[in-house]
Length: 196
Image 1 (tube, rainbow, N blue to C red):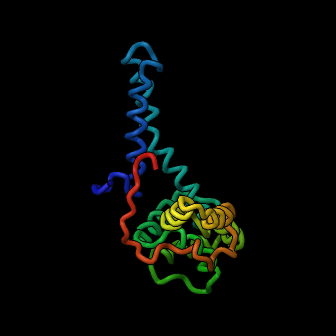
Image 2 (spheres, one colour):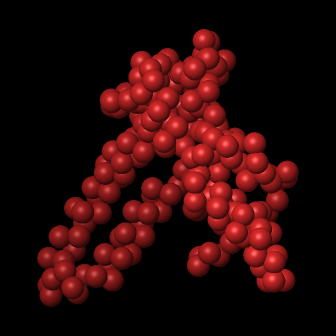
Image 3 (tube, helix red, strand yellow):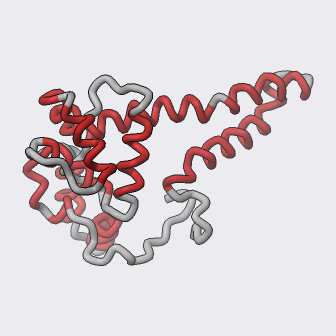
């Protein structure tokens, strides 16, 4: 339903800011009876969103990438990795990072090699941080759909199995289960809607 890519991963910060602006417009009468004063109050808050987002984004990805004690230059490392894995399965990629970091040689891709060298400085703390930040399993759409269809027919076992796995998403025992794998065909169009 988002053929133009308005809500594509890389566009989400701008769309979040746009949505906050729409929310602020609706709240203007509650901020101040004088519309001009209400706007003057709301605009600076909305304008600070991107800076705040970048700070929080670095904190999240520092954990996912094992960047112990993140520094400003790590923004480039994060952006490089995200660009390098643009077409990869995020869950599989990130859950495999602890093993990749423990290898003796860096990856061939320059962006991933930059990550590897930076994360190596964190040693065991980096591996631990990544293992605690990157789930091995997530409730993947194709499996959720299968569980829902089975439940509609009275069979709740697939749902119960999925629930037991996704409530312990960091358990390394899940790595070799179907729950850790994307669908066989990644180009399957899965249609969702605003309330999904």
